[in-house]
Image (cartoon, rainbow, N blue to C red; front, side):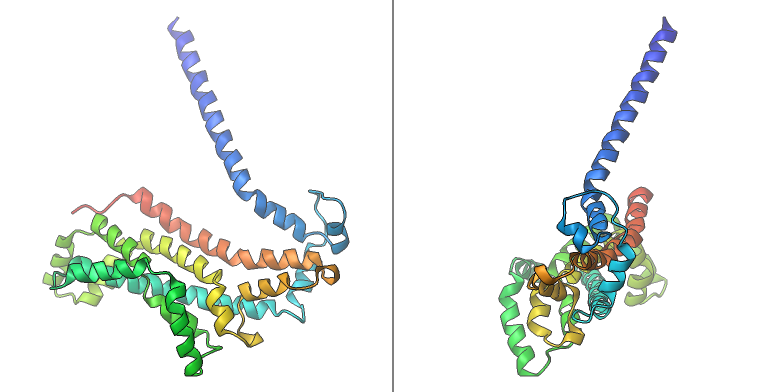
Length: 287
């Protein structure tokens, strides 16, 4: 009798695991379906795409890749390099300086600390388009258009990232650790760079992903500040494809360009996601 009950319990456990893993696989398929569909569309020729819809492999993937990469009207390699420079640099400086600011506000007790925090939070609720008007006017006044660094420098001030970093520091950084490092003779920048920043790896990884994706997909500011072809980024080029005459355009090349545009985002996510998982599984810092 006991054996029968144990067998039923084991069978129930196996079935529950099978259902759980099956549900997870189904969710993964739903998440990846659009990407898989995009890969399939990028493998088809223009004539195949004009015909009936099919999920079969087209066989023209490398041809479309070559045609898109060597397109004379849209310089894809240059656009991807420009976007990567802006997105990666913005992600690095945004996360670093936001973490540094959060460290200063969290660790130090100074007059006006609450006012500083409130002021930064107030800036967070102001839409970026409101301040963009004056920023663009200054850029044109001083002849600073068509400069990639002009899209990078504003990333130093990121109230949303600062708020996230501060909340994370409050949960993982014991102030006793900072005091101990000071007693050992470490200066503040060494404490931040060698002690605090490694602790914040999961938070830094998360914000670098969000900052990279946000900067990579940014169309508003680059469209207003970048007018020369050699400085244009990927979103501007995609907008140019939307305005093209699709009846005379190679649709296989269009799908391939869209695929190339999202690959860097996926690569950055796969590279940084291991730090997120590591931070979740390693547990919090104990004071």
